Image (cartoon, rainbow, N blue to C red; front, side, top):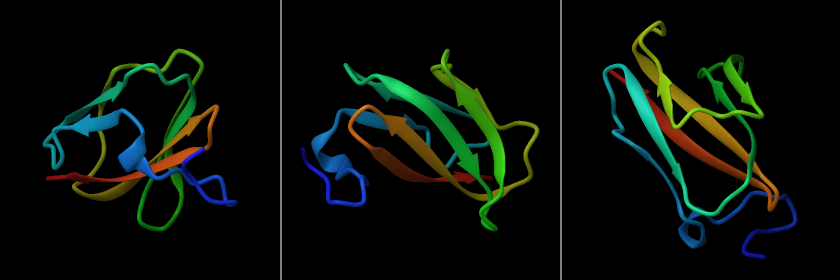
Length: 88
């Protein structure tokens, strides 16, 4: 496993990406061969603003959210991946 004891994965070793980033309205998730358990989007204060469990979409709309920075947390069977998302 390519992470540490916290369960936070080194994303350089996993085929996961999101694009476009920064984005005006939506992001696309690409997780080749990874089983995603859930995905959460946090605002800069640490509050969950969106959550997807089970059937996770490949395209996530951010059009209803204000401009700013967010953190996307992806929960996989191997651990957690975190990505900063910027909506402009």
